[in-house]
Length: 267
Figure 1 (cartoon, rainbow, N blue to C red):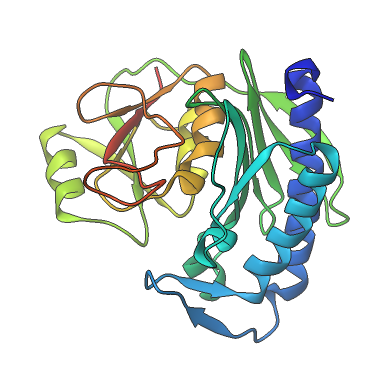
Figure 2 (tube, rainbow, N blue to C red):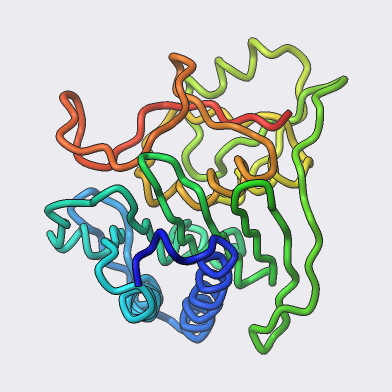
């Protein structure tokens, strides 16, 4: 079945199902003393990253054969798809591994569909807090997940119009001087520090206004959260004011799938 014949609603439901399955694997390992390995790019990886990615990729490839999958740990192992096509999946099985290792709850499972460079459908699941965020064009929501990894409630979410003091979402583990300088220029601002792709979701829920990122990210770090934010009425742009795009290959000044600095905003 061609991906173009499958409804966005069905795709989103499958992403949700697989994110929950990945989260179940992560939580199975969360309270154990799992080993941490440092990859070539100096980022950490654990058994939880690998277990979650395996179940997610097996599910995506079974449900949508022929659709390219770009996944963080496979890329780290040199498994780079030769051709992405017009539509492909981006998977980060455990975004915020540092949070996971330090037993902080701000880690997430991220699954996104990119069409022609645009993140159109995405799911961000935070298994330690029982929150899941999903989005497709014109529809974004927050779901409650119980201890049995079942959805117990949903509600629509949307960005807010900015008024009064600006609320800025900043990285907990990757704060940079450029970020601080940017925030200083905003004047009086409230700072919300959180890890992983949850920063996009805070904007999507209308709980903050802006997320400036002057630090290293890869496409699998941002695609799912970006999809949720765009579905909720927000946007993510490069410093030059262009929408952040996906599927970046053969970049003149960076490696495949690396993002430039960006600004994500709500209303």
